[in-house]
Picture 1 (cartoon, rainbow, N blue to C red):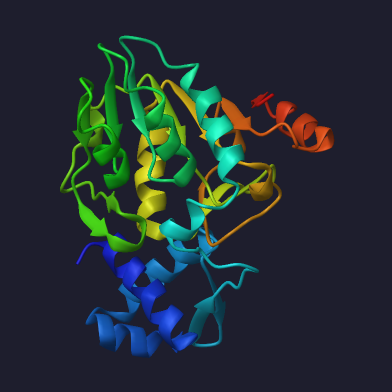
Picture 2: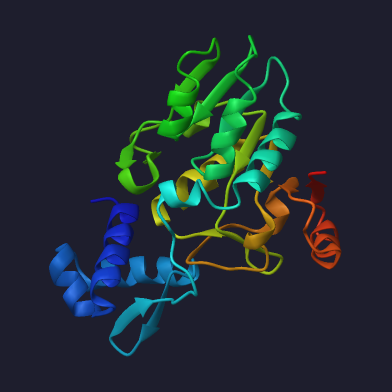
Length: 253
């Protein structure tokens, strides 16, 4: 089992049991205590778990991740306007990445008319949305995540380094100046980190409700992104904080 698989299994066990002793994790995962401690330290650094004497527990947040079907209906008009704003930055000849989030799903609806566009995605709903278009669609290979209808990729299954991505459109469950982007699922986070590292320009598509919120696992620092595309209701005070970090704020009208 690879480290990221063990770490995700740890998260799943903690979601079920609340907290666990390191010795119990070692037994369940059939690995040494040294291996468990390394994995735990990684999860602690990501902000996913916290340690107590001899064990770990999940970091609690106000709201857990909701299912995709539910989130597709949340702030729908705002997400559609954000998606349309994002689509305005896409040009013929681009090679873009569309993330598995709900706002990026709506971007797909506005780009089906292109002829010379490559779309790389880990989202099955986006694939289905584009299936009758003339776009070049590349699906990232990996493990199916049923709750999000997405593919979470592992390095040993998919060679990210061969992708040429001009623009990446990323979703996030939380965003703050201090902690950057964050999300609930370790495997989704790993995919997003890889894409952000590779992309020439990174756009974060996010509605105002996600600002100043930190959830389970950090995706990246705020300085690793180029643009935030959000709705016009974002507080101007927040906008200035992000612009001071070199991020351009783009709002809907």
